[in-house]
Length: 494
Image 1 (spheres, one colour):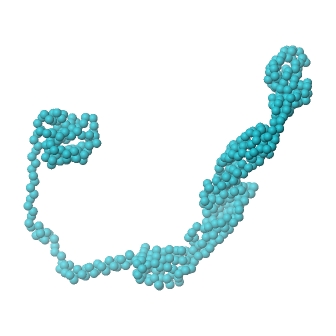
Image 2 (image 1 turned 90 degrees about the vertical axis):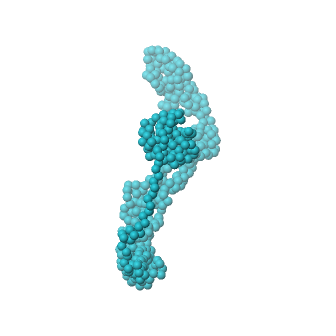
Image 3 (image 1 turned 30 degrees about the vertical axis):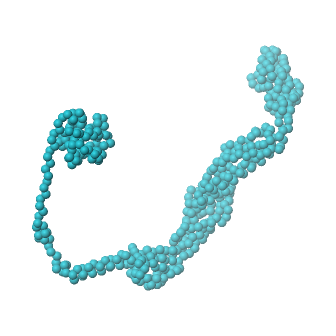
C-alpha cells in the first residue's frame, strides 16, 4: 500500500506538520523522527495529528527510537516502526472503528417547562399605562441627573492688581554659597582654553654674532708634578665669558712653570674679545693644580646686522595675539553659558599660558615672526537660577498682604558690573512683577452655584475686589443656572 513518508525537522511544530498532511493523497502517513534533532511534539499534538489523519482518511505511523515518543504513540494506538524500510515491509494494525454519535431528539415540552419555572409579570407592568409611567419616571430621572452633572461653568475673574518694583544692590562673590536677602549671590567660575597662531612681517635689524674670538691662555703649575691639560678644558672670566682649550697640553712639573695653550670662545660674537689678564678661572678639578690668565688681548670675535625681530616686535605680536584670544574667549564663554546667565566681563583673566612659541627664536634672523599661543582663560558669572532666587526672596519679603504673584518677575541690569580689589562684583538689578489679590475659590463656589449668571456677576463684584467685571462661560450656552456641583465649576484668575 502506498505510504507518504514525512521526515520531521527541528523547526516543525503542530501547525507545520498539519499543513504537510493536507498535501497527502495516500492511505498511509509515516512521520520520521530525525536522530540528532529535537522535535517539539507533545502527547496532545500527536493526538491532534492522529485525528487529522483520520479525517483525511489516512492511517498515521511513526518511525522513532525515542522511548517517550514510542510510549505516547502506543497510548494513542499509533503504530511505531524502527525504520522506514520496516514500515514498508510489516503489516500495519487495522485502525479502530469509530462510532458515530447519534444526537437525541429535542424535547417538545420546553416552552411549558419555561412557563412553569418563571413567574408571570404583574398586570400593571404589562399594561400600556404602566409602561408609559415607568418610562416617564426614567426619563425625568435621567434629565435630573443630566441637569446636575452635565452643565459646566467657567468663571474668569480679574482681581485687583498691583505692581512691585525693587532695585536690588547685588554683590557677587565666590565666597558666597547661596543667595541671601542682603543681596549677596554666588559668583561661579568658568574656564576655556583657546589656541591662536599669527605671523607678522619684520623690518627691524638685530645684532647677530658672526665669528668667535680666539687667543692664548697661559697655565701656571701650582704643584711639583707634570699636569695634563686636556683639549676642551673650560676657562672663563669673572663675568662668565667661557673659553675652551683647542689642544691637549702637558704642563711641566715645578712651581711657576707655565705653558701657553690656544683657546677659543664658546659663543660667537664680539663679546669674546676680552682684554689681557681677564681670564682667571679654571673650571673643574684642574683648578686645584693650575692657574690661568691671558697674557694678550683675545681678538677675532665679531657681530653682524641682519633683519630680525626685536623684543619690541615680539611684545607687539604677543599683545595682538593675546587681545584676539581674549575677545574670542569672551564670545565663546557667552555661548557656553545659559541664555540668561550674566558674565562678569571685567573678571576675565588669563589663568595659565599653556604654550607660547616664537619662530624664529630670540636672536635669530628672519623676515617674519610667528607666534603660536595656547592660553587658558577664566571668568566669573552669575547664574540665572541664583539671580531669580535672589529676586524672589526680595519681592516676597516686601509683598503686600492678601496678594500673591501669578507670574515670574522680570529683571533688568541697571548698572554695569564692576569688581573691586577684593574680588566682589557689584551691580544693581531692577526687578518688577505684578501681584493679584488672592481669591478663595471655596467662597466663590458658595456664591455662584445654582444661581443665574446675571445675579452671579453682581454678587461677585460686590463681594470681591475686582479690577474688571467677571466673565461666565456656560456649557451648554442656553443653560439658565450655574452647576450645583463645585467640581463642574472652574475658576480662572487673570
